[in-house]
Image 1 (cartoon, rainbow, N blue to C red):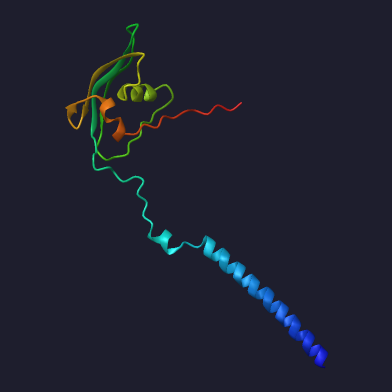
Image 2: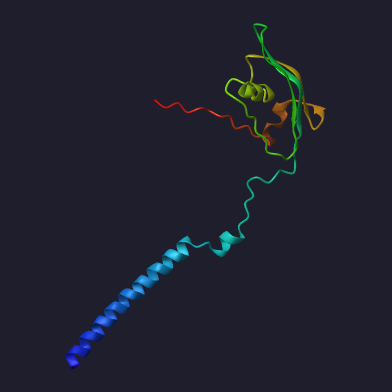
Length: 142
């Protein structure tokens, strides 16, 4: 009886050790994947407007190529201060040309119309550090 009791105790101890190891492992997984207090207190600050916000307006904006042809004409609108804006339209509508003209990157022609920054005529190059322009590049798969 004593030997049987000893074996049972050893088996329980072994099972208990395995159970304790399993419990410790489960707790480490829970700690790893559960949000911590720091995560719960974290506040995303990536899209907060800067204190130096700009309003950009454009009136009758266009692009005339060096050969005299016009590829963009009569574009009027505004990007309000502190707002995230998107330019959308079908392929070939002139979205990229529009942004290149607005940002002063259309060196292959001359801009027509006017750009107003905070309701005053301005040069976009002076404000590049306050603005962002993320062009869409198509991915070509073979």
